[in-house]
Structures are given as C-alpha cells and as structure tokens.
Image 1: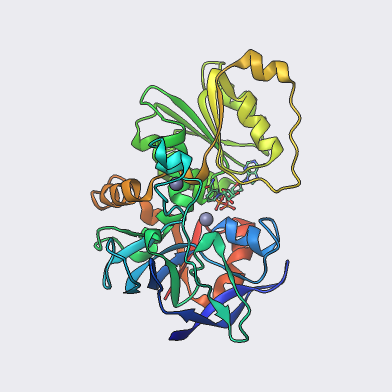
Image 2: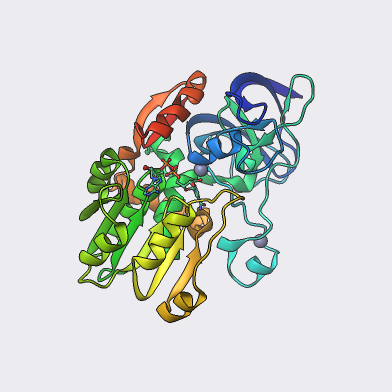
Length: 361
Ligand SMILES: NC(=O)c1ccc[n+]([C@@H]2O[C@H](COP(=O)([O-])OP(=O)(O)OC[C@H]3O[C@@H](n4cnc5c(N)ncnc54)[C@H](O)[C@@H]3O)[C@@H](O)[C@H]2O)c1
Ligand SMILES: [Zn+2]
Ligand SMILES: [Zn+2]
C-alpha cells in the first residue's frame, strides 16, 4: 500500500523547484509516516537545489518540520499515531563507536527510512537530510520523530528540527557559553540569530552580531545582541576587538561558512578563545592561514554539526523554554507560505527579506 501526495522536488541542478506527485509507501519496520503541518525553508535546501551538497537528484526538499504521526511500522514503540513530533536528522543508532562511548550526539550511523519515496514513474527521491518535508506526508525512520509538548505552534516547533537548533546548539553545546563570556556571531540569518538567542539564554555578558545587512542586525538585537557590526561598513575584526577591551571575543561563531568569515572568526577571537563553524562551506572552498597563528593564538577550533544536539534531550527542553517565554522562537517566523511558494522564498532568502519562510500545510 502507498499514498500519493504533493511534494516540492528539485529535479535538476540549479533549476527552479517544482511540485510533483510523490508516492509515499506505508511505514515498514522501524518507520513512521508523518502528516507534515509546517516546514521551514533553510539555506541548506537551497544548497541542495544548487548542487552544493551532492548530485543525487531528484531531491525532495524540506527538513525543518513538525507534524502528527499518522502511522507506524512494526516494532515502533517510541512514537504512536497522533503524537505531535519535530522531525530530526539525528536518529541515533546506539551501536556505532560514538554512541558506544556515550556520545550519541555525534552518532556516526544515523537512521533514515529504509524504503524510498518515489515519483509516479518510480524514480527514487533523495530526501533532504534524510527527511524531505515540503510534502503533505513524509516517510521517516521512527527515531527521526521527537515528541514535544503539542502546545507549541507547528511553524515554530519545526524550526528546531534544523537551523534554529543548529544555532542554539552552536552556542550552548559546542561553544559552551558562560555568563561572563564575550561572544561574536558572524552571519545573522536563522542560524546566526539562534546562536545569539542561545548566548543570551546562557547569560553571555557581551553578544556582538556581525552581518552585511542592517535589517538582519536589527533582528539580531531582538534576539539579544548587545552590539552590532555591519562588516560592509567597518572591519569586523577591529570592531569586535574594540568592543571587547581590545582583545577579541572568547567565542566567535561563524554562521556563514566561507573562508573569509572563518578567518574573521579566527582573528576576532581572544587568545585561547574558541571558533565554532556552524555555517556549511561549499566543497570547492579552501582555507589558507599561517600555521604559526593557529599555534600562537591557542584555543580551540570546532565545527558544530547540528549544534551537537541530541534531539531527545534538546528539542523538548527548547520547546519548554519557549512556552515559558524564555526563548522567542516565534520571531524566526517571518512569513508563512504554501508549498507553491518555496521557489519564491529562496529569492527572498537571497535578498535577506526573511529570517525564515515557513510552509504551512
Ligand atoms: N551546522 C549545521 O548543522 C547547520 C544546520 C543548518 C544550517 N546550516 C548552515 O548555516 C548557514 C546559515 O544558514 P541560514 O539559514 O541562517 O542562512 P541565511 O541565508 O538565512 O543567513 C546567512 C546570513 O549571513 C549573512 N552573510 C553572508 N555573507 C556574509 C559575510 N561575508 N559577512 C557577514 N555576514 C554575511 C547574510 O546577510 C545572512 O544574514 C548555511 O550555510 C546553512 O547551510 C548549518
Ligand atoms: Zn551511533
Ligand atoms: Zn536546515
């Protein structure tokens, strides 16, 4: 048995996305079908469409989603039909070398659905980040469903499934922000502003937002930036140093992921400080830096995959903090749109008009 639903597909590199009929199989062992209620548009979806991730077209886009479990396959006990869930791309295996060492947030063998969703002619789809959620119903591994308090609005909850969690976790988990820390965040889109919100939640005393776009910097203030720097108008390394007693920030988060932003992060950091790379570079990008500077400045240079989050631990916590009024996740939702508007939302992302467009179904 299977169902036919509408989904947003990227058929070929660089081409506009299109709405296609997608065949969704009934859930097999360990799988679940989820009725998607909301799915945010993330920069990573655009990376897929432009061939920046891999060449396994056609892609079923969308991966920042929340919805209701419709049906589950054999052996699924953690979720049941009717549960309100956020979809994650870190369904931990429990058996890989990371899991066995008590580091499931790094799981090297995460699960996706085994069966494939297909086009009507049988062509198998590659779901974005193993999810694929710009669609009425999607098939995932049951472990990709994380139950949270259903009091949260789906368009807000879904954002925790990727970019917002990545940003929050880049500050809270990877960067391990403390209340007496100075933090700078480069790139204040959905991910960077979430890092700012995370730094505020942890109590960082100084939070410097860096972007090329004044509109993004205004939003950054709303999420907790204490200072803003437009890096078109002034040198960001000098500006961050000037705002931190001449020294640089304890933690600099690169939420863009380009060689020049990473270098800014590297040099805008105090001695023995930390750089966290959460933006995703293009495979063609190269970095050149004097090795003596890496040694001489000390500290740690980290990457943050998915904000080092463990969905079962972090999603319910972040939802609870939001419902208590301590985490303004609703501010990330710039607009709600339909499935037909995803292509237009990519253009708005490029011009910086939105933090997140969210498809609501
Ligand atoms: N590590 C992860 O697990 C993870 C998860 C989700 C997204 N991401 C990645 O994070 C990055 C950001 O995603 P997003 O959705 O926030 O994107 P976005 O397009 O909404 O935001 C990017 C921001 O960076 C700013 N920017 C661009 N170039 C800049 C520069 N040279 N200097 C300063 N600011 C600059 C833009 O003005 C914009 O505000 C993307 O690369 C995305 O793929 C990573
Ligand atoms: Zn594992
Ligand atoms: Zn994403």
